[in-house]
Amino acid sequence: MTTADYAEKIPNNVGLREDRRLQRALESWQPDFLSWWESMGPTLPTKDVYLRTAVNVGREGWAQFGHVPMRDYRWGIFLAERDGMRRIAFGSHKGEPAWQKVPGEYRAELQRLIVIQGDTEPASVEQQRNLGATAPSLYDLRNLFQVNVEEGRHLWAMVYLLHAYFGREGREEAEELLHRNSGSVDSPRILGAFNEETPDWLSFFMFTYFTDRDGKYQLGTLKESAFDPLSRTCEFMLKEEAHHMFVGTTGIDRVVERTAQVMVAEDTDEVAARGAIPLPIIQKYLNFHYSVSLDLFGGETSTNVANYYTAGLKGRWLEERRKDDHLLTSDAIDVDALIDGSIGSLEVSALTGLNTDLRREYIADCAGGVKRWNRILDAAGLSQRLYLPHVAFNRKVGAFSSIEASPTGEKLSAAEWEASKGQWLPTDTDKTFVRSLMQPVHERGKIAAWVAPPRNGINGQPFDYDYVHLA
Image (cartoon, rainbow, N blue to C red; front, side, top):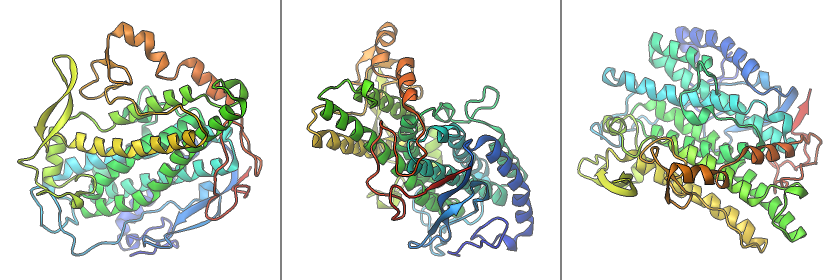
């Protein structure tokens, strides 16, 4: 079960050749996927890219590295190994054997969860398709393409489940995943954050830090699912997702480091004229991507999510490490709320507050990155600090969507917001400046002036390795 079969047209470790009907269905979807990749994937022409390719699902040696033409990348279907003794860890079915087939009473809900997750994967590829033309180094270009091909593989992961377990409706949904497009007026992606632009590399680093981190937590809840194939699929996806967050974390590291270097060398905060990104602009981009990503968790309370939990469809982050009864029928949680027009909190059932529980895990994780970036500033002898804005800031979903709030959590009138939002969110001038820095550096061992080089290369290779051969 651990080793992928690369002799097949579709590499897989799910025994696809033993189900000829499913194999034919997926092979008929494959040309549509490749057509989508050609039309909506990376636009920069390349000969090949130094990519990692999954070869098994074991703890060690799960991937191999090599130069691969991207269109020939072997997208495949990988599930973590099955635990034949696995039992459901939460909800009303707690203690029962994990499901190997979709229970009829939960079919529509499971299909919807898979479709929403699947829709995010190609969306990010579409958002990032033009970034290669302005890559700050070949190292960064390679990382972009690695993220892209793995998002493509994560699409395959969800499409496999739709084809294998949801019949004709699943096949139709798989087709629709290729027909919606990020930012499309007529057929946009399902979630708002995946219709936003990713026009520059600062946005890309913020996206891979904040929005891909949301993906980590959403996959983490699905990994707990009583539906075992979904659980095993998400477990393997999380292994690949870690690299995407690494790209964001270290990318912002390097932007902050370079800005700090220029601030110290020139003894000034005014680094824009010297080709670096000022800290206030970095903070604005952070504010935007963090607040947009918070919206991806939905409202503070949700009866749908409560029902998903009780049914066993989605668990909590690290469910089996929680020290409670895993039923939550008598537990409570404080959630963020608007009370008599003021920002506050109220106590609700723990079941209906599961979105808040997950969002708080995410927020604590995001805070770790901010501490990391502030250590860079501290090490440079600078007093300035980055921060996460208040959860009420710039929200379009949930309890605070009807109000405006400052990054410190002060409720604002519409006029106050309009007068001040340019201090907190990227303005057109800020975006134009950042884009002006996005001049491509496609020469080995060279890097753009607005970002510091990485401390280490990929897979033990040096920074000046030939990570990408351009066409």
